Each structure stands twice: as C-alpha cells, then as structure tokens.
Length: 247
Image (cartoon, rainbow, N blue to C red; front, top):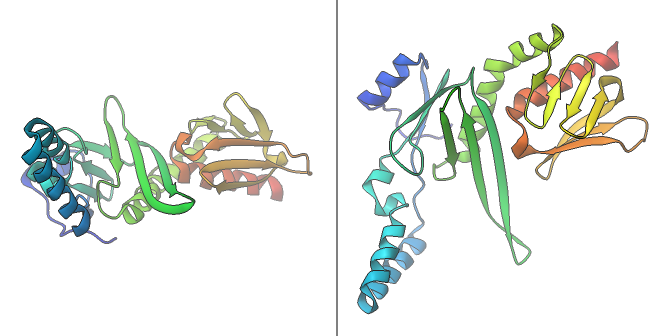
C-alpha cells in the first residue's frame, strides 16, 4: 500500500494496544487540493471579502473542510492494522476504533459522469462495529484504491472461515440484502435461489447479480452498497455454489 510514514501518536498507539490491533500496516493522510483549485479558492475568498465581508467569511469557513485550509483536518489520519483500524472521521473530532473480526463493512464507489464524460470517482466505505462504533471513510483520505481493497481483504481473512463454518453447521448468515445458508441464497423480499439453481454470481455496474440456471432468466439482485462484507459474501457464496455443482 502507498502510505504516509508509519508513525503513531501516543494516543493512537495506546488505542491500538488496548484493542489488540496488531502491527501497523499503513497510514493514510487527507487528500490535498491540486494547485489550480487551491489558487481558485484563494482568489474567490479574497474577491468575496473585498466585496461582501460576511459571504467571504462564510466561504472561508466552508473551505475549512479541506486540509489545505485547516490544520485540524490536515492532522487527521487513517491507520490500518493487522486486526482493525483507527480513523479520524472526516467531520468532527475524536477517533474511531473498529476490529476486522466484528465489523460490517459497506462500500459505495461511484464515478461521476459530466456531459457524457467520465469524471471523478467517489469512494465511501461505512464501517459499522458493535454498539455505537461507526466510521464513514471516504476519498477525503489519499489512496482509496489501496486502503479500500485492503479493508475488504482484511475482513475476508478475519470473518470468512467463521462465516462458512456457521453456514455448514446449519446456520443462516446475513449480509444485508442477501443471506446465505446451506440450501441457497436469499434476497430480502425477492425470494430464494437454491444452490443447484445458481449459475453464477457477478458484480457489475454497482450491482451484485445472482443468475439462475437453465435459461429461466430468474435472478436476485442487490446494490453493492447494500451488501455487508462484500468480499466475504462473494467468497462464501462461490464456495457453496461450487460445492453444490460438484456434488
């Protein structure tokens, strides 16, 4: 992973030890504005202040959401460990600590299209822990193409084997819009597909589609953003489907 220097503040190190997060794997800093946008914002602020003081001050207050205009925002960090994460939320103060073995991780990756031309991509990961622990991690931090897949893979390693074991023992495991059992895949409000009737499970254009066999056209679909622990779901579902096919 491309990261900032792997250094922890005393407070972060104490939290990591208290929650048994293991070795630090990477640290990510807030994303900076490019020079052209930074200069434009400075010009707009000065222009507004010269003409109307209050709108100028309000605009500068709005700019403080960016690390380029706020030391507090610039000091925030996303730390990834072997067993979990510590993150400063984009808005507000404090830190959130969540372990991979107890998180429900949702991802929402959207590419903007402007006048038919692909533009920026927005990354939003929601990490929901036990109790009130919750973190919304976005492209506010540099390198979402690195830290996003790392988090999904870490959750897969931490929860995948236990999820599969529970299902094979006869339990049903919930992944949000989908749930998995030994008999098949169930989509909330859309019915049940037995493993013998699942041809493939594919992820395309922000959707997870479970396609039926035999040309029936039957399928169960859900938005990727509505699937908890996406990589765990895909790995376990593909394992169960393959076992059914080979039986």
